[in-house]
Amino acid sequence: METVLNNAGQSLGLHKTKRSADLVTRSKALAEMQEAIGLPDAPLRIECIDVSHISGSNVVASLVVFEDGIPKKKDYRQFIIDDPRDDTASIAQVVSRRFKDHDEVRPYRPNLLVIDGGLPQVNAAAKALEASGIGNMHVIGLAKRMEEIWKPGAKYPIILPRNSEALFMLQRVRDEAHRFAISLHRNRRSKGMVDSRLDDIAGLGPIKKRALLAHFGSLKKISQASQDQLQEVAGIGPSQAAEIWQFLDQDNSQDSAVNTATGEIIES
Image (cartoon, rainbow, N blue to C red; front, top):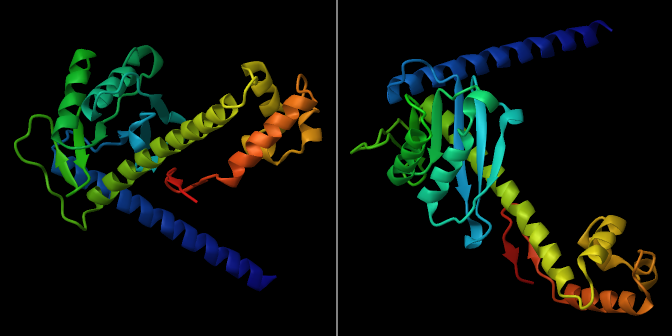
């Protein structure tokens, strides 16, 4: 028993030490960020916007929030981009939507808004903030290629040392925004694949599609069902069950796999 208590005490001590070290590291990162970017205070609330346009379709964006250097996931948001023309237009649209009615709906403003991109993207964000009536908002762009930090209208970027805690934190925030945008893109792509496959089955209208998905739960399970199991769905008779089974059986034989890490299609 004494050994167990000693081990527990050591584990608690290590946990407290790690938390203290993490707190010191985060505080150092925020202080470095304040000095490098020229902020009046340490950016205790950071918001980051990332636009994802994998394969050039289904353009989506994400907004993630970090407070005191820690993700605040309940404040995360995802956006479907309407009429995407290019990155700058998409960034402007997201910024406008984020800060619409901000005082009533989302009273907390970030101390720092980070845009995944370079000078064109951060300029677009700054113009959208101005158009939304948001003044004195500190916004930067973090360009991927050289990890340069751009301020609106700047001639030259801010370059942080590669071992800078501030740069590590900005990269972490940017990467989290990218991950969150990709998750929405992958979900929308998956739903589009389900809809398109079922749409290709003659005579299968929206009511029967919904009934099939409600009964089986996914396209994969529909594809694995026998003709008898398909007939258990309301409105699906023997002949249509045979058509669905034959179509999906042929479709499966020449199916493509999906890379779950990237959402990209892998040809078989």
